[in-house]
Image (cartoon, rainbow, N blue to C red; front, side):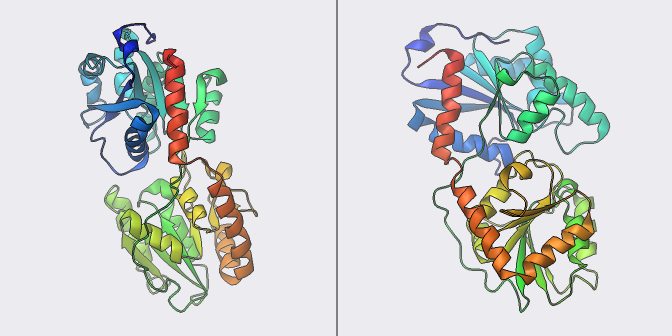
Length: 368
């Protein structure tokens, strides 16, 4: 395990952090956005955050780059090295063979094994992830559900700290998208890439059970990550029961997504595996009630019948009933939406999250 050391680094006024990730750290998704926000806010915390990346190669070839990546990180002489969970499996063997002079911690956005792979890849990656984590001083995780997953897998609770994504104090909103209801009683919004774990087809099948005049569904997300699944989504929404009342917008800018939140009546995403579920929190901050499976981190973000309507995973009739209830009952939407907004505004801001993150790093390195 990397050990904190007293060296010339300790004389710096700025805490130097190197974060090891996979591919382009400028990607605008998931953990990459999380890390970019921390890098932007680091100077306010008396810190500097730099990135070192594994090449984005077919699994598991990037393991061969482990020694080079670790050397590149240590060559920068940081005070602490942070290992992104998306790159942990590729560094595990190198960490088992080499001790670093710096303290090393993990920043986990997904459980060991990842979330979008088949059984074989998941099993192999989980073993490699755990090999890496055994050689880290501490594990920072993005959600309570991830913390519980790790503890069920045998990680001691004292090694785990929850550092969730932050909320924006103010969000720039793009031009109003117009009347999303389109002559119906309610407008539902779903924000999520068209990948199988997001449950878009489950949503379409459930939505198809609603009367035509009841609601309009708007899909925002990228269809490129899983082309085969996206083709199935397009085929389903083109069927006669949905074609006139399901609108696909593709990927939108942050401001345009915010405008969609502001114009919608409720948010729905029946995802099975959301390690955090940032879009749920975003929707709640705009005062939208949430509908989804009782799975992943969503039950930690919203309570059934208080801020959300949560149903058992895979129960399409129950999902359809939840959508119908919200579409028919403006008072229910208002009650759940007000509670959702209040709960969302109680979550830490990005400045507060940055303070938590860098405080954990300083504690590990024994710096104040």
